Structure formats: C-alpha cells, structure tokens
Image (cartoon, rainbow, N blue to C red; front, side, top):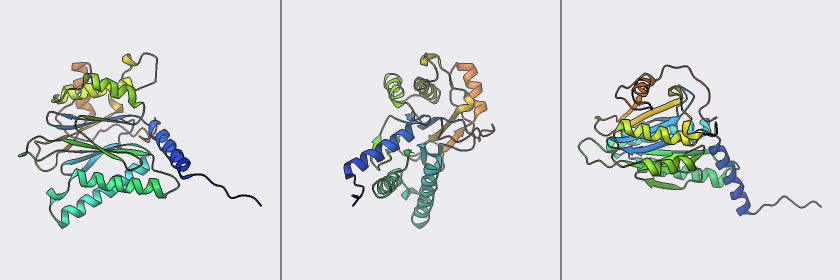
Length: 260
C-alpha cells in the first residue's frame, strides 16, 4: 500500500514563503518616503495604465509590488471598504491604520488557508488634515499578513538591499519634494542589475510612476506628477524631480507592471 503524501506544517510554510518572496523579487522596485509636505511614491513602472500607485481614500495612498492581478483585487477591496465606512460613519473615520489592518488580516488568512499565497507586498501611506500637525505614517504589509509602521521610508520589490542601503545614506527627514524625488530615483538606480556600473545606470522618465499625498491639500490629498513635468525638471536638474501639476501620463501602455 502506498503511503499518502505528507509534509510538515513547517515545510509547507517555508515553501509558501519562498514562493511569495521569489515572485515579489521578480518585479521592479517601489520607494515610498515621507517628505516635508506629506508622502511621496516613486515606482519604476513601464506601464502608463496599470498603476502600482493609486489613491485609496481622501488622505490615504496605496503602493504595491508583485503580481498585478492580485494586488489590484486588494486595491479594489480597500476602496470599497473605505467608501462603505465613510458613508456609514464619517469620512474622517476612514484611517490608514484600519485599512492596513484589513489588508494584514486578508493576506494572513490567504497565506495560512490557501494552497498558494499572494505574491504581493503593500504599503499604505497616510497624511493628516491641513489643520493638523504633520504626522505622515507608512504601513508596510507583507505577503504573510505581517504589518510594520514606518516613519521615514519603505522599499519593496526587486533588489531591495542596495536601494535600502542608499536611502539610509542619503535620506533626511524634512526633504523638499524636488530633493525627495531625486533621492528616491537615485536609490532606485542602485537596485538595477542591468549593467555592471550601477551608479551610472539611468531610469527613463517614461518608466517612472510618481505621486504624492500632500497634507496641505483640502479633502483629497493624492495627486500624480505627470511625465512632462518630470521631463522638464529632469532636463533642468539632471535627475528626475517633482512638480506641482496633476494629470495622468499620456504615454501608451508598456505591459504588466508586475513584470521586470
């Protein structure tokens, strides 16, 4: 009689962890950091329509890496949850911490109960209202449902170690938007294995997705920084930097942002 297949619980969890980490590492990186007026999102993304960065609610932004279909379903679920709570109670009752806890619970359940875990990593950024003191916060949610709050920056996806090392050396609290974007893009350049000289590797403006949460803005704090603004500032400053205009990029789609 053939014995049934058996694997210990520890081995199953190790296999799930390895699968999820490999899937996340195959994508391109995202940097989320706090600057003087709020939260900055900078993603290397070849697609103009399949976003890694988006708005969840009035003062809350969302960034993710991994499989696009998986984090897109999580994004839509977060929007529905936020809208429902804001309608039932008050818009100010919708908080980044509540949404982060919801995502942590969902991902933890999927990781434990389902055969295949989600290959995603999420960051929730939140800013206060204009009349409040500056108190931007970032919540990082891993594929297994673990959650950590950060006050400076978060790096997700791709080759994270050199990017994190670069940010630890160059990031300073209270950076202006121009300096913050330059710091994030220079750090992203360190993580590419495209050639041997990583310091000289550049990222095309068309491959950048940049957005901010600005605390001074009334009601909706989220805004995208369009490619024309980035191109103009890149030509003037020698590095990709931020602007104040808000519109969607107009370049054609270049594929799934979850793929390198």
